Amino acid sequence: MRFSVCLIAPEGYRFSHFLYDSCKYFCYTIEAAGYECCMVRNKLYSDRINIIFGAHNLTDPTAIEQLKQAGKYVVMQSEVLSEKTINAWPVQESYSTVYLPILRQAEAVWESLESNKRQLKQFGIDAEMFPRVGYLSSMEEIVHKKKKDIDFLFYGSLTPHRKMMIDELKMRGGNVLCVFDDAAIFRNDLIARARINLAPNQARGTDHLSSRVLYLLNNRSIVVVERCYNQDWVEHCFLSADAEKWADLCMETIRRPDLDKLAEGFFEHYKKLDMVDLIRPLIDKLDIAGRASSNDDSKEIQRPEETKPDEDQHESLEKNMAKKLYEQAVLLHEKGKTALAIKQFEIILEIDKDNQETHNDIGVLYFQDNSIDKALHHLKIAVKLDPDKIDYRMNMAGVYLHTGEIDEAIGCYQDILERTPDNVEAALALARLCSEAGLKDTAVFYFSKVLEIEPNNTEAKQCMAEQ
Image 1 (tube, rainbow, N blue to C red):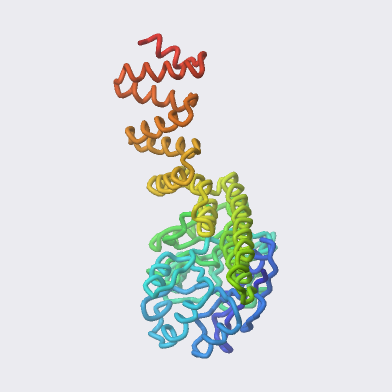
Image 2 (cartoon, helix red, strand yellow):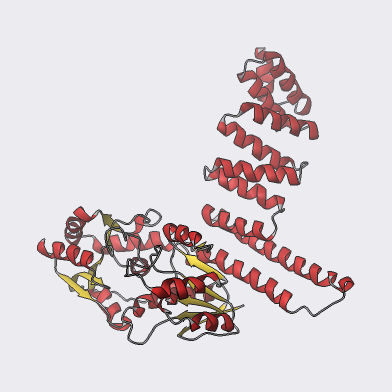
């Protein structure tokens, strides 16, 4: 499977360059994940999956059919959506007549804002939440100057809110340089010279973390952010304050004697957010869909009795891919990346909804993530699919114990003991539960059962002696 990152950049449009870094992020990440990828502007390939940035800039209705004819494409949705327009712009007819139809016929729509996902859902479009951007070694592009001669740097569009915030900083004595559309080679040299980079929000109410901040973090830069609603996952990598205290924080930071040490500490934290691990589930999902589609498209007209081999081949393909995804999910869990492992398991279940092992594993992870209802949902399915698998029942009993649902836990342990009479763990759990409930005779029965299985069990011997 091959990809192309395509930027829609109309002639004369002054804001396209703000997506350049995002395009590079995606292209380099896809390559790092083991796939071929290129970057182009205003060009589509029929032999690649086109990942489109800036699709909101398409206003001619003929673009809908052009995209369809070009083949499979994904839209990276980067704008703030409302019912009738984007980014609080004046209502545009092309929003409903061009942009939304383009999203509807896309192979996938990748989105990073929950509010946008809800809005798209109202339009009948199911967007995939794009995982948060993380560290990518190939995006380290800035060599910092040993002597920095710029106190504060802001690059980007100077909206009214940003101007107000920066003017306030200047009034406090801040020496600020603002640039808008400098080419990357010159912009990056300014970043290398800057002691502190500024990240005020676009507007009040438009307060999501920007890709600008993440690019700076990837390049060992100190960033002072106006607090964003979705910064919790990465706020340990920069400084932030609410609008009223932001200028004060900027001035406090510029006076710090340990800026180099601070920058290095933030960078080390950010490096732990691996970009390839974050995006791999979405890419693998496209790979599965692409392989399945290619298999379907290659079929010739056959007599009914000749269809089974192709169906078997398709099933084998899905199972092999599910196995690959499972191995990746286990690896992510071992690295402590529970949320990403859960996402990977969810993709496996989309391929094979009756995979009992995956239902069990995702149930355990949901339990560790304190999502109890989801944990029980998947564990019950695992038990139903394979009633004789004791580990699944033990996991479900453990969840019931944690939630204080003692009767349900006892029922699970009794089922386990019925199926495996020599299961000392289940017998001991039942003995403890009955003892705590004041059921002395029943507790003695189960402690005796433990000693039948394991005569030297210290806990059971002690409890029997106390009876």
